[in-house]
Amino acid sequence: MLKSQGMQDARFFQSTRGKIVTALRRRHSASAVDLAGEFGLSTNAVRQQLLTLERDGYVAERAVRRGPTKPTLEYSLTPSAETLFPQRYDLMLNAVLRQVKDKFGEAGLGTVMDGMGQRAVEKYRARMTSSDAKGRATELAAALRDEGVEADVIELDGVVQLREHNCPYAKTVTEHPEVCSIIQTVLHDTVASGSKQVESIATGGETCRFEIKAS
Image (tube, rainbow, N blue to C red; front, side):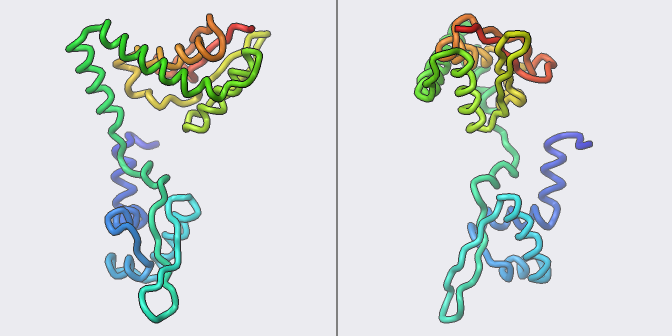
């Protein structure tokens, strides 16, 4: 079991595959021969690592003509590869929200959260076409999945529930639970008023679970 994300990052970037990813980020693109020369490895060994990275969606290849000879295959990182690098957005967001609270108090932070909630409402409302709450909840779940949140809708004992199985703000909500108000505002204004959160990942729950008031 991995002890921390930091240790996971360190181990990956110490591996040959991790070094190749780092080199491609620095060089923007390179051939297997280029990378083999940089690391003192055989070209075949590098190609095997590149094939794995390509299979996993982190690397793409393209033919580049470097001279009069036949085109050379060069490799570059895909946008998905950014997820391999340490992410510090949660630290920045926590620092920003802390500063807002220190300078403007709870009311000021509440105003910021309200504004973010309304911007989210405008974005998601454009995808709502269903005439009933369950349909709109299903549409919202699909929109969330498009943004990397594993969300679904179930009906349990006649109660419609929207569930988020991961939280993009998990490391922020612990210190700033006000962030949860964004999705609550979205549910209230786009799916059904009166919807309520009954489980939270931030407080130890397995999911962020919301009960949707039928309409």
